[in-house]
Length: 450
Image 1: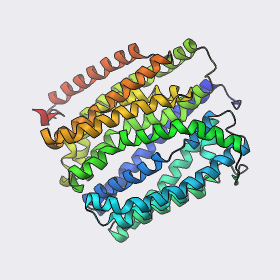
Image 2: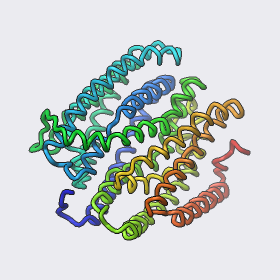
Image 3: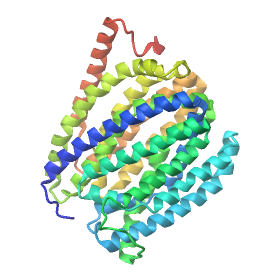
Image 4: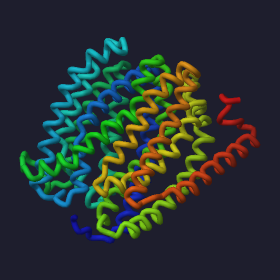
């Protein structure tokens, strides 16, 4: 492992602060951008693009080799031969992904009975080639826990990409805005990545030892990320088949807001928890467990309060910000928010298993979530319609959490007692905020069940 210039605890705290601040700023920008785009474009476009982006993400994740994670986790992560080989492998994978996009466009168009997918999928798929040439500098900075540089870089890229998309949406008022905007965003990210560590410019290389290590770690990462896609994104693909693209667009608005806590914890997990534990894996297991639980306690307790608040206010925000076309997102929001709780418990411990070189547990967790989504959604739709589907999506994080808990038990990092305490706090705060809300005349966030 690379020797860090500052104590790990200080780097972790600094990284956590930067991640939270950066994510907050990013979500504010994204939220404002969404409001502007919903004024310029119709809900159908958001539903269609949700399906397109999910298809592309699926292709990306089904071919993922965990290159960035390998650079962070491997002892040779900053060895030029290692990251140059990783970069070369990344480029080849980018071209492969685009070829798959070409092959899948016609079946996707037939399945969804949507001819526009014939040109949307291949054009958007070109991003894989563009991003394939991006520098591995962000992964190296994450390895060094120089989180501030990565956060600032991501924020600048987001501002430039979103500004381009809004201008294109105003100009075209069609799906071409998303297609061209996506390619522009990918180009901005790729070019900008070379300015992060100017002295570390990747070049083509093919070191057999590095390749073996990359593929050895990437084997289970491939399975884990492929199943992660099925677990986290298959809801949009199935919804696109069960419901109209308009309803999928409305669901996307509700899910985007509800998923904010999950995304900030995922970012903390990847950018802070994962590299922190990767630098401490040689500790005795009991000492490592004690450190993880002690540092995790504040995170999950704060999340319990904040998520409970979002459960009780999210629908009010949607009512104030979005017009009547997105009214159904109001009742979806609190249900989806409740389901995020088990995802928070998962993402604050799963990086520990990954740092130990055990992505197999992540694969098992995501497989169970996918099975619940894949089997439960069509069944729930036949019984309870859209409401049943939303409930299944909200509950789908529970099997994800249970499988991860089993992995923690196997690796002597069990966290059940802390999880029970945090869950009790979450439920109590949801009830308390609901009582306060009802007492001041704002009603119940779960009116759809009454």
